[in-house]
Length: 473
Image 1 (tube, rainbow, N blue to C red):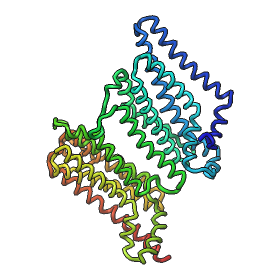
Image 2 (cartoon, rainbow, N blue to C red):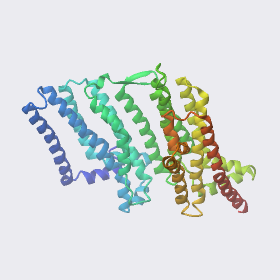
Image 3 (cartoon, rainbow, N blue to C red):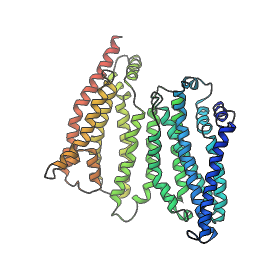
Image 4 (cartoon, rainbow, N blue to C red):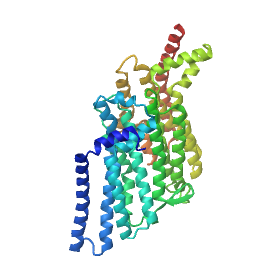
């Protein structure tokens, strides 16, 4: 690994004596400051009265420092690698490097963070020493280290993947991605700090398998890290292709459903049925996230449609070309992902022992929302070639579709259930138990399907245009 040319390049830059000793001086100063402040507090007997309390406080501060090093500073380094190549006009040289995509990935994740990894190793040593002094079981300590390393790997790989998707914009930044990941993981880190004295007692279940929470968190983060790294390898290898191929998109959705169901399984099978239905709906919403997000990384562009239409014509001899085009289009992806989600939603409904028919009715309404929004997304794909402003118009329509019903419900004097015609309003109503009347649900999905008619006709028109143009060639 050390023979990796990217690692050698970054090491030459980062390990220059003047620069390296500046980093070391800052790090040592922070460690001394942590120890000094805690020692002063210990001597004053105001914060703690026993040496074990001193070790506990130092351990906590070192843990915070380790999280900053592994999850924030290293993520900034990983996310800035591609951006710096673009700004320095050396990205073409980076692309032509005669090394594999895996070596490029390792070169960035390791090479850009050589200093951070060195400091992290020192922190782990100090954490082990003070962990022993505060009488933490070594097995529990190793479990904590495992979880922290896996979380760091997930954040770093995700930020790097995000930076690769933005290489066309030199002013792009991954700060928002880092902030979003920190917000998503902050409840986990908060629980870690509040339970730092009882880490060995915290266990979780994955389906029926009980294990320490730190191990479960680490395994889940490691699983999604593998997907992030797979995405990085794909983007380095096939730059012009979407992030997900069709098969990978469906596999990711299946894996996400499996992991999500494993985390929720215990709560869905509890005997207390008071909170079963909101837990079921919460699972629905979380497992719906990849249905909404994966297509954004899997969209096939209009030029891909044109290219594939020629292959269809050669293979089919001009027969059933429209059906084949629709199967190749993004619509098949969206419907496939939602079908997988429906299977999971029906499965959790049966596991929770809830009535199936009302849940199927709600699923139908959610599908009508999803179908209309996905059709708008497909309209953007097929009409952007005609006008660059098509995306702006469709974005405005989407905003009106989501926000207008909420505004109408707020300004009208009587409760007319207009908010339920918005996806956001309908989803919120699931947790209020306010959607009891079947006629309202029917009105929602019928309205949505009527709205879908025009987008479907416009999309078919563009597909007919593609096929007609291919026949004339």
